[in-house]
Each structure stands twice: as structure tokens, then as C-alpha cells.
Image 1: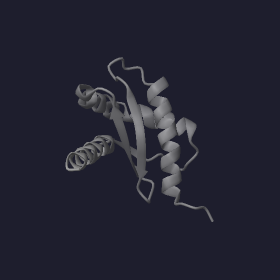
Image 2: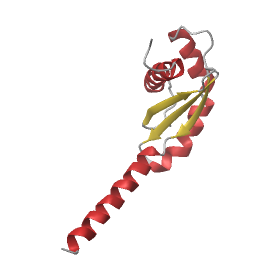
Image 3: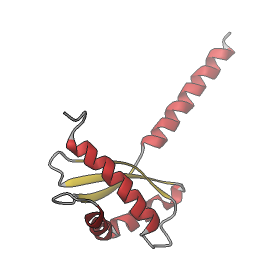
Length: 119
């Protein structure tokens, strides 16, 4: 038996392919530097939530708009590359886990500094 669910395996495959499509096939010059950080696929494989991070904070909304307008193109490209019965619908979201991790790191550093000051 495989170690994890089919939706997880499909999500990993979609992440690789979507990242490649965005990098090499999407020709919008306004897209900026986009990284696909993860894909969560529903158990019925009908919908995929694609999490992306954008290098510049001010380009997040524009990049998300560009990706959402290119959904059908990306899905068509996925259909050419992946052999599954139906390609899931795509929903792009900004990945907040990087900012969350940075905030935790800042808090830990602040606690560390306060601990050193009391000794």
C-alpha cells in the first residue's frame, strides 16, 4: 500500500507542473517572481488550492489576478501533461506560512534577547 493518499500524490504532481507552466509558458510580463509553495487537492480530486508566494509584497494582488485570469490556460496545459481522468479546478491563494514563520522567528529572537539581558 502507498504511504499517503492519492489526493496528496496528485497535489505534489500538480505543484511541479504548475510551477513549470508559470515559469516557462505564462507569457504575461507583469507576473513578477512567483513561487508555487504547495497544492492541496480535495479528496474527490475536483478542486485544487494552489498556494503561491510572490517576491515583492506590492506585487501580490497583481500576481494573484494574473494567475486567476490564466486558470483556464494552466488547466489546459495540465491536461496535456498529466494523465488523470479530470484535471481539478484551480483556485490560487497567497501562501501566508512564510510570513507566519518569519513572525515566529522574530518573537523567538526577542525572547532570546530578553533572556540574555536578565542574566
